[in-house]
Length: 218
Image (cartoon, rainbow, N blue to C red):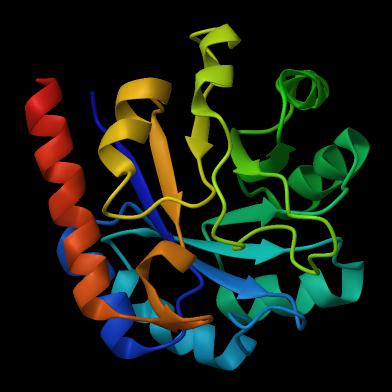
């Protein structure tokens, strides 16, 4: 089964080159001023040119207003929107109708009952992103470098299409794939040398670890 791999929070040519060369199916650009991975629309638009025909460009926002979304969609022309805030199912329906783009909704997970929130979005969103719930006091809804208990996902219906996120890196991706068996994975802080600074060597190491883990599973 094909595994989607999204490298998120890209800001430099070297990082996006490493992601694409590794075989990323999705490249994510974050538009959230509080994040160290925040990028200007013009920069993201320039970087995404390299991904054309190779990977889907994902615009990641957090409770963005209409004006902000309009500027991002017009400037970046993304292949997909990722909503990482408290957006309601109605908001998803509204944005899908307005832009005609696939939408991925992030759900924060710490315990089994958090997965119940996914049910309200399941028939609306094109993909779910199951991410670790941020630590107390954290300003970022994602990219905090913390995992959650992947065994919780055993209770999910096998038909649920989701990407796994939260604290993934080259050291633990094998265990994550073995335990959760996701159809897609999303990594950001796990391939950084410092917050917001992607390391091409760590990106390459991550892809190598994924390949090794998948080979062992097969």
